[in-house]
Length: 337
Image 1 (cartoon, rainbow, N blue to C red):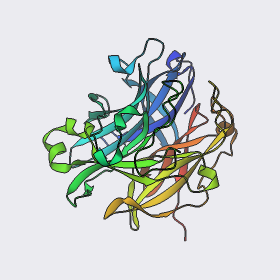
Image 2 (image 1 turned 135 degrees about the vertical axis):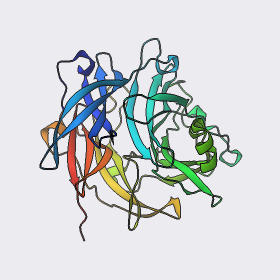
Image 3 (image 1 turned 60 degrees about the vertical axis):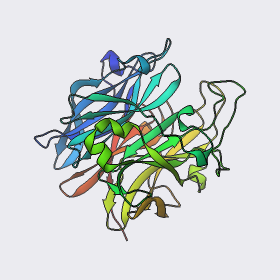
Image 4 (image 1 turned 90 degrees about the vertical axis):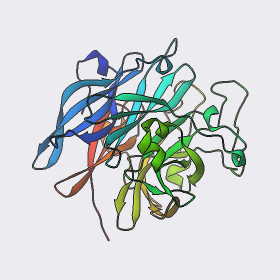
């Protein structure tokens, strides 16, 4: 998918979620970026040729920055949706980044059909004394949900979400700098997990916005992800555990509006323990995919592959991803020895 002549796509189409309508038709929910970096979430039916995704037919906009907390005086946006179908809730759960008065904040919406979405509101992380901080102070992105209840820290079934807090508050309050939770010494943004008891969410969907029992899952380990890591698509259950495709960032960040012009985003993977999804069983030392094509190397933010959705088509898994913050690509995910 590439930008059309629609003004809503003037600055790019990227980082899509995905899902299927009630007739089984595969759709993407792309981030559409209008002039001024104002993002909306669209709906686009995927064209298949021989079972392979080759294009899309646009079906309109399903989420726009209409809520007051999704807009600032000089900014607005609903960005980077991730969508998980959770059968036990009978709902698609969309996490997205609301770009409001205080910058990026994670939020949730739900839908039964991908077309009509009900906002549940911004995430409100429960206070956890042993962290000696309030997670609500920090910008947070890359929120994805597991598609079924998993064992919580207490062993009881819970709906779990991965997320990525960012500890540097200097962007918001100059001179404030980095504030780390207790027990964390590495200031690079990493992947965390939080939980909502299954019974609470099944009784009231808004409980999903009030996660608790926050735990660190993973930090940067390898050169290709040396600046930061974040979750990609929702975890996929495989025989070894939960397959989590994640992105890693290397290069250098500049303290300016063009801070991401000298970085590279690549994609890797982890296997999370099904008995304790906060535990990493294995992870890729080298990226599974890195920027190679012209569309991946040249764009709004050059040198980016940013996976955000996985779908199975005729027994084959495909990964949909953002290309240099300008286009959407697809790659076949293969199991090898």
